[in-house]
Length: 429
Figure 1 (tube, rainbow, N blue to C red):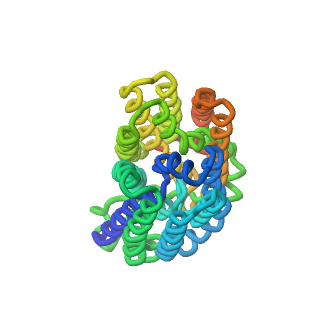
Figure 2 (figure 1 turned 135 degrees about the vertical axis):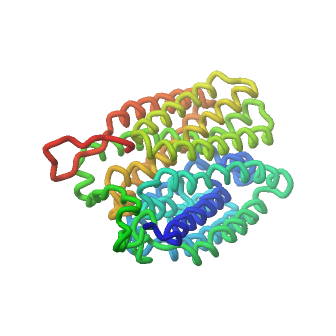
Figure 3 (figure 1 turned 90 degrees about the horizontal axis):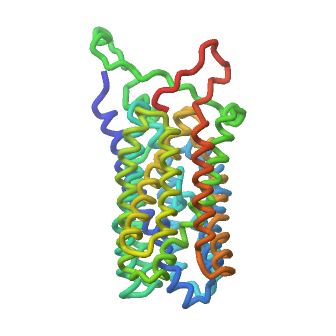
């Protein structure tokens, strides 16, 4: 039988990770575009330089992710998140005091090195995936929905602060909020994996079928085959995933800094744009929950195809839109697609390659995603600086997302290394 406190503790892990994900939106992951114009004017930073700040953050996260992943597998997030949270908080306070472009770029690199303030961070998703198998999709969905809901709150809140106290004080407020939310509960409640507490995945105690109770006990989920890092990277599926995520990374990196100034420079009020991007974040949170529920029921690659296709559609709306309908439609569709994508990134590697070496595998995969995304931001910045508009960039991003959707549609679950006579049946992964 399932021990209630085991199940309860798994959901405590999810709740803490939700709060940590919520707090990371205070670090400028989604709202940095609101800082582009005021910081650019005061510090004399070009769009490409501002893009390089985001790139430095992503590249630094990619460079450290292999170590972060291995540490997660070995030690878990209980110490790693509080330490990373403290470093990020100090770095944000330092950003508020920056007076040259190179200082901003260097400090954003520090943010990335921690692994916690980077998009698709593995520090909050890998531990959740290790605690659940039966309801992994829903558990991950609830945890990552904190990112979207955090965006709903922090986007208009950030713009309100920018308009009233300026960008420097805004970074100070964000630093304090982030540390208060991410550090204390993580240090108290987080654990590496259920086995460390005498439990098995899904909160099941190790003696799950006591004498006389086997007939009424809930049957365990089928044993999940865990691939080693070497085995995983010998599959064609892994390389298809890497290529698809790399192309989509360039596309999403290109939009991360530039979508907000694009709409503001198209004549829309900055506060209205912040509300539309709050709708973007709300769409991400909503779709993350739905996609998490779906991930336990349909092949995860189908959700991935929908995510990339939706991102292409959102950029199409941005290309043709010149009124509030297109502003909000593009933002909401983009957010819905990002929400599905958050589940895909968190779920697909655990579903295809198991739990045991998940941190190490994702620690190798993440640099590909982050470096490609990091290249997208300055690339679009250079195109803007040379052409004076974003039109050609948006067409490039739309095309990259469609190609990624095509590639990932063929990335089926790989057969085990010791291939059985009968093929693997693809169910909800």
